[in-house]
Length: 456
Ligand code: ARG
Image 1 (tube, rainbow, N blue to C red):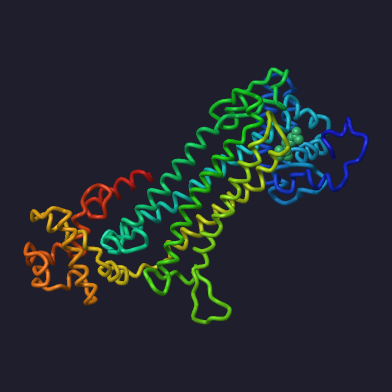
Image 2: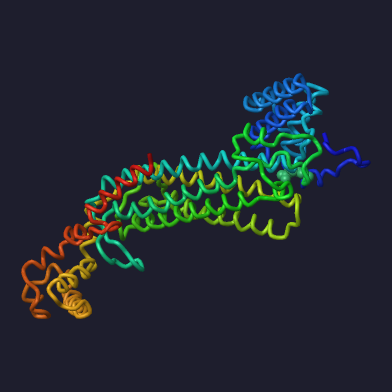
């Protein structure tokens, strides 16, 4: 069972085997492992290092193994150390002698570096698709809600009126940057470590350009030590995933607040909520809470791998096997969160009337009232003070600025005229915010057009 039994005289202790093995989790990249081996042996044959006949036998054997794993005919049994040993052992069992030539000019160190890169690359593409689906959902929501008014907050205190489209646009920007980060990482990591051997290259005339291009890399890596010791791409991926999780968590937090009995801005679909075992009236935002909660384990993965890597001397060390479970878990977690969150968002109902009524309360038009005075020659600082006094009057009476009579306005400043009511209506407050990036409908239309192009 061992690839390295030659210099050993004792059987491996069972606990040692269990502690050391990685097959129970690295079987996940069997497809990438086999893909890498096919490229490697194809190159070996082109270079005359193995015969074409052996290459063909090996490739056919590997393809058979791939099919059998996929269909469940071939199972991963506990006696093998890792996916690399497993595939090689099965190959030799099936095709004999030729199978033993596959590992010529290769080490498990460059092999695992390759597998992990191929795996991460595939997952980046998958995660990118999920983020794109969320962006499409957000864009759809934006188009439908350029006239849906709601309060914008600072310090979780009502600040100024905005639209739901504007709020969703903020998340569009965040998730769009996430896609950019994934793309940057994919590009930077897309170099092929295969051919680096254990750490110092090999003595065989390998064609590294050949395997690199067969496997869809831009070029081979340039330093064999770094090639087997580098897990920067894992760290970068986990930090990108942490940021995605953080964005999802912030949005979830808002949805939880919006869904609360006090706000009632949204109604979650029954399919995306759960009940209470004791309180019959409850409908809880569990999915949003779980998405928020799972952020912790994604950050945990990033912290763990950074800590594992920080003390490692060059080149390969077994510590690096610890990169796998946590990366797999973070990838699964973020993919799950993205899919669930997008589903929750697309089935959620926004209570536009409640949002609009809320935007009207809480003096969200106070800045506009001050701007009105500025438009009539009052210095901004004085205008600020005048409106502050009016707010006090309103607070006393439990009304909004728009409910004051013209006499009450003029009692504080004679500059006010009848058109103050139009100037501080919510529609005006939003519509007049026309600068790029602001919630005004004109500005928003431009931004929506730009987002459409970005998603193409
Ligand atoms: N299972 C190992 C890992 O995940 C594969 C590389 C093993 N190489 C070695 N020299 N022990 O890192």
